[in-house]
Length: 312
Ligand SMILES: Cc1cc2nc3c(=O)[nH]c(=O)nc-3n(C[C@H](O)[C@H](O)[C@H](O)COP(=O)(O)OP(=O)(O)OC[C@H]3O[C@@H](n4cnc5c(N)ncnc54)[C@H](O)[C@@H]3O)c2cc1C
Image (cartoon, rainbow, N blue to C red; front, side, top):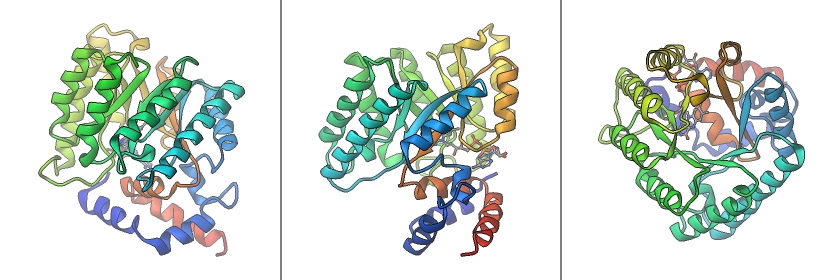
């Protein structure tokens, strides 16, 4: 269970260059290296191998080429080309056609119009091939612009495109009603970022209560919604809402992160649910990895043991 202090702590150390250097050197070095618990690898081949293993367990995938907050248009172009190459590789390999991406990776911090152009280029390759593309939600300075870009593209016909809402933010229930009204597709999460009290519930109990309310709205009124959580109470609640409202199991899916609660993933598959696993990969894995540690400080012990076990 994350509290605000541990989240803040991990967000601070995520900025540390020294830690990043150490982690980058050891985190992925061997098949047993510690970062591999949450990240499929640094290459698309490794991600595809992980996707095949997930699919063999009866689940679907979404691949995320890690990277965020690029600082130049040339980096944004490179990320766009890299995403298109990932899409090509997925088509060639025959794994499920679904990717997740971040707008700051496509240049949102540098120039909004270029980021939108880059997303369009990715969609031009992805849509005819039947891909679903999910825009991940970043921290609150990006909420409004991300939702605005999403709605614009949706209204221009990109209906194989989805977005993410975070129950931690006060605004999200209103955003959910607006997206449901135009038919958009939502992945519901609690929110991975440390946010100020002015925009987000400071208490976890309130984040959870909002999550439960949003589950209900999404399952009853949403369009192919995704309930993305590892929280057994929320998963049980979603199942109950579906049952009580006569919503068929194939009308929504659960989503979980690669390496987290595989037991729960298997249980849901066995119970007849659709389960999608979010598979992150790529060289820029450090910020993602730190967010996962911040969610569950017990993971730190696991990483420390692994680092010591690597023998430096
Ligand atoms: C598919 C998917 C996509 C996501 N996309 C986004 C996004 O676009 N934007 C965003 O802000 N956030 C995203 N998140 C992250 C999300 O916001 C939460 O930070 C994260 O899922 C942890 O919250 P939880 O719902 O699992 O519940 P919590 O209440 O945090 O955890 C519930 C239980 O789940 C288990 N658990 C949770 N996290 C971990 C972990 N790291 N390691 C081991 N066990 C764990 C523990 O048993 C814990 O008790 C995504 C999550 C998923 C599953």
